[in-house]
Structures are given as structure tokens and as C-alpha cells.
Image 1 (cartoon, rainbow, N blue to C red):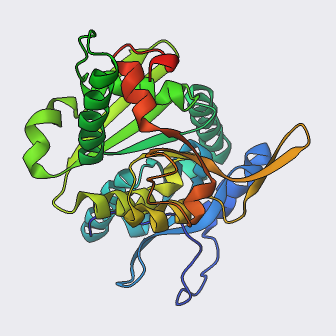
Image 2 (cartoon, rainbow, N blue to C red):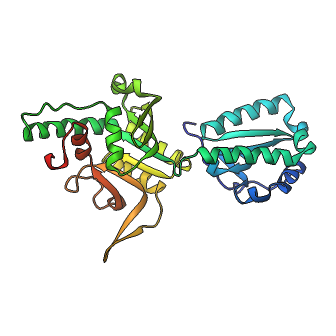
Length: 316
């Protein structure tokens, strides 16, 4: 299992056993938290039926609440299964809060109060939107080499040299008219590891926010970008892709809204796919022509490369 599953409704083979006593007692005290909390969600590999049921989930805060009845969860075998499940849910991007049956029986109101406090704290710290940027590193390298060569011909008297990826990314975010916290995944073949490995776990603050970079080496890196994007789509609200290849059409289309949105500027109305942005080649070269990704807002990556080496818009 390479990637964990997303929270889903109960599988067709599952027969609802109803809430346990401690789940009912916990639910009675939810109050206004009942609008945000959901029960009966599942994670796991559908094909192999290796699924995990979670008692309660607060999706917007990435929180799972588990209530452990003593008779069931005190057994050694079940303790091991609980540990495996907790690691799985952590990989899926969730924090697990556990209460024992004794705690619930003694004071369910206090247990709910603790959940409410944790939930409020996480929501206060959370960005308005969770944004992710996927970078096809070989694509960036190819386009940088071509763009720098072109700009040198335009400006033979300027000393133009490509910047490191960590310096390029803030320019990319600026040209996408974005800000705030953004998680970045840089996918690359193993042969490029020496160029980007130092960036894994790198945090960079810039004028309008913060980026956190993760590097992932994969032989078939372009396919893995799509797999990763879909597998972790439940953790992000907006998706930025730095790439231009038809292999990305299907996965990006899956994570974006099904319907086109409308935008009006004066008397002109246009359609676009919301929650996504592209850094790609220009309209004369892009591999996305004729696909739904043509409706995704975009910028030409050469502008970002030019800005990163100090060129003004009228110099590109």
C-alpha cells in the first residue's frame, strides 16, 4: 500500500451495528459541535477490504476521535491493531484523539469539551485554505535552460543565471497571485536527487507567506505526481501544478470541481475550472490544449523564470 485511503462512507458490505453505549453518551454532549463532527467514516484500500472504521471525524481540522471501550481495546491483539491503524491514519494526514471508555462513562461532557478546545485551537491556527503545489522538476529544468538561453540573446549585456529552486518558487507563487502557507512537493527521478535532496523538509518564509518543500524521488515521477495528488486530495483545497504534459490531465481533473465556474469582467463572461492554477508553456505549445485543463487559470513559466533572474515584464 503506497498511499493511504481517503475518508469515505461505509462500504457496501458493512452492516451498521449502531452506536455503542459510550458513543451515544459522547454524542449527547456534542451540542453545537454536532454540526462539524461526522460519524461512521472509513479509510483504507477498497479492493482488499483493508478498511478502518473511525468513530468520529472533524474533516476541516484533520481530527479523528476514537472511543476505546475497555473490554475490546484492552486485549493485546487489539492494542496492536489500534497502533497499526493510528499510524495509517497519521499517514492519511489526520491527528487521532483517543478517550477510554472509563473517561466517557465518568464525564462525557468534559471529553467533548476537550475535543472542542482542540478543534477551536486547530481552526484558529489553520490557514483559510490549504494549498499545495506539485512541481515536475525535470520540466522546470528544461524550461529554465531554454528561457535563460532566450533571455541572454535578448539581453547580451546582462549577466543572467538560473536561480535555485527554493528561490524560484516564491516568484512562482507571486505570479499565480497567491500568498500564505503553501505545501510544495517536488517530484524528480533519482538521478536528480543530488540537486534537490537538501530541500526535503526545507521551510522558507517570504514576504507574503511560507512554503514547506518536500522532495520525492521516483523513476516514473510524472505518474507518481498524479497518484499522490489524487491520494491526498482530501487534505487540500487548491492545487497548483508546475508542469506541462498530458499525463497530468486526468489526475488534476479528478481533484478539481466537476463543473466550470463563471467569471464576469464588465460585459464579458468566461468559464474556468476553480481551485487550480497552472505554470505551463504558452498557448502555442501547451499539451493541455483541447482538454479541460485549458479552463484552468495559468501563467507562462518563462515569466517566472525571467522574474527570478531580475528581468522586468517589458524585458521578457
